[in-house]
Image (tube, rainbow, N blue to C red; front, side):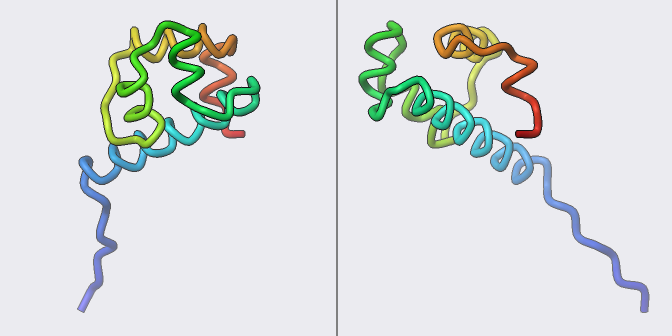
Length: 84
């Protein structure tokens, strides 16, 4: 009997991607000196509830939203998507 390796479904893979993006956003926010995502969102004129969902990886975001967040964090998309 040949065993096949079970692949993650695209839904699970995307959920993992959202979680990892959220972790990176949180890491950069904290590195910028914001201990609270709510204070960061308020200071950068970003919806607090929505931003919280992004950090938790529970909400998909548009590329325009990601672009706005990266500008607010003062980091390039190249830096954001590096494997660090």
